[in-house]
Amino acid sequence: MGKKIGIGLVAAVMGFVILYGAGVINFGGSADPTNTEVPVGVVPAFVDQTDASWLLNPESKATSNLVIWEDPQCPACALFEAGFGTSVKKLIADDVVRVSLRPTTFLDRGYPGRNSARAVNAWACAIEGGAGLKFHDTLYANQPAKEGTGWTDEQLQGFGAEAGISGSAKTTFDKCVVEGTYYKWGVESTKMFDDLGVPGTPNISLDGVEMPVDVLKQGPAAFIAWVTNNAK
Image 1 (cartoon, rainbow, N blue to C red):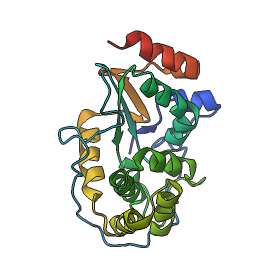
Image 2: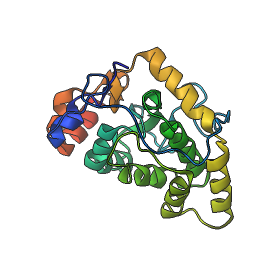
Image 3: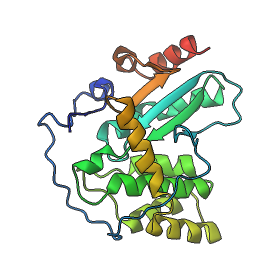
């Protein structure tokens, strides 16, 4: 253990601090996934094969890179998405930076059910189905109140429908979720998370420079200003 959920910043903005490995959170999730076999899967071809990141705006002409590490079960990540997701989308719309999301599943070490890994796989399935960002947002909007509870395969499949996946694409998506087609994405990305010594999630950096805690404490306007002023 020993990793913090969040870098203090998101929790501070929302008025409370959530720590992982510091005695604040007790392990012992209750939900068991529908699919109990551990799949092997592959790293999807549509993510970067070097750092396993997913670039949200590949058409961007920006030269700076905003990188966000997240674990689907991380409460502070859900808070970040709720508080700053719109700001990230504005930076994309204004073509200020290229934005890459990097998943990690370190919280699975403390809870049963492989819920983070299964969620990352489902996210990849949704990217393949053309609804990656909408699924990502839906997943965090429906994060269980109790950390470690996780999601069933049926819930993940339902999020795909909410994200707009339908018809034959939905059939493919549902199968991908159950079979763990892209399970290896979370596995490989988490290895990199550990090897890089990322201190916790969410972790936000611009061109390799971690965003100062005080920036997010000041809110979305400060977030956008810091990225804009420091982008190349």
